[in-house]
Length: 474
Image (cartoon, rainbow, N blue to C red):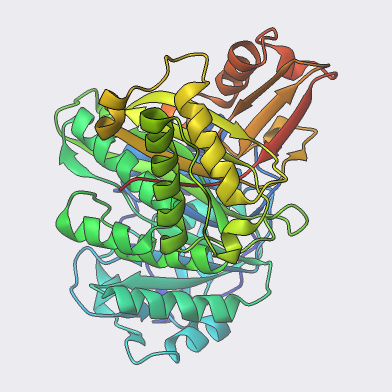
C-alpha cells in the first residue's frame, strides 16, 4: 500500500510487539506468506457490499490460512477508514482503549490512524479513551494490520482494544459506531478473535459451530451470556458481541467463510484452538425484505401455531382456526416449516412465495410437513411429545447470473429448468452439511430438481436466491 510519511521516532507511532514471532519480521517473507494465504483461500472476492469481517489473530502458521478467507473476500473493495476491534489479552480494564493519532508500524510500513474518526469515537463515552497499557503487549490488533497492508491501499485505521466490558457498554459502542459510520460506504470493520481454546477437536467444533449459529442469528445477548458461562468461547467475545449488535442495527447479512483449528495444522487433535472467518454484507435495498423483522413474541406465536396445528390435525383430524390479530403476521410471505425428532428431520414442506397471510401459511405448511412429505410416514400421536419445530420465513427470490452472488448459509437457492424440474435448499442446509458451494449446488440439482448434478453450469438453468428468517424451539 502507499504509506503516509510519518516519523518513526514519533512516540505516536506504535511499534510492533510480535513481529518475528507471530509473523515474519522480514518484509519480503511476510509479504510472500500473506500472498500465499490469500491465493490458497478457495473463494472468489465477493461483489456484495461487505461492511465487516471477523478474522483470527493467532500466529500466522496456525491461523493465517483462515484469515486469508476474510481478507480475500473483501479484497476487491476499497476503504478509506478501517476500524479494528480487538480484545485485551494482557491488561484488564473496563472500556475501550482507542489510539487516536499517529500510526502503527509493521515490517511492511506505517499505517496512519484516522484521527478524526478515532477522536470522535473517544468523545462518545467516558469509558472510551486512550489507555496505553492495553496496547503495550497486545498482539490481537497488530496481526490484522499486515493483511490489511497487502489487501488495500490509501486507508487509515481506527485501532480499538476492548477490555472487560458489560453488555450495555458493548451496546453503547455499537450505537456510537453506527452513528459515526452513518451513510458512509468506505468504512470497513475488522473484528479480531480466535474461537474455543484447548479442547479436543470434537468438543471444539461443537462449541465453535454453536458460536457461529449465535453470530448468524445475530443473537448478541445470548452469545455474550454463553461466552460468560463458557458454553461458547471466543477470546474476542466482547468485540464480537459489539459486532453482532452493529450488524443487527444495520441489518447486515452474515456468512461463515471458513473454519479450521490448530489441529488441522499440527495434527494434534487433543488440545486445539479454533479459528473462523466471517463476513457481514449489506443486502441491496432493491432485494432486501421490506417487512419489519420479527420480535421474540411473534416468533413464539408462529412456533406455537405450527405445533398446535400439527397436534390438532394428528389427534383430531381438525384444522385449527387462525385468530391472531398481529398485523405483522398477516403479511403474505412464503414460509417453510421443518419438524425434527431427536435432532433428525421428520418432515419439511413450504411455499417459496405465498399470497396467503403468513400465519395461515405457517399453519398449512406445518400440517403438510407432518402428513405430506413423501420422504417420511405421517406423524403419529405417539410422536408428538418428541417433536421440535422450525419456521423459516422467506424473502421474495431474485435471479442471479453468477454463483459468486450466492452466500453460503445466508442464501437459500432455487434451481429450475423447464417445467416440473425445480429444487430448493433453505439457507441452513449449507450450515448443517458444511458442503462446498459446488457440492451444495450439485446436490440441489440431483436430489431436489431431478437434474444432472452439473446442471447449475448449464446456461438454460435458472438460479434464484432468497434469504430466510429462521427460528426454532429453544
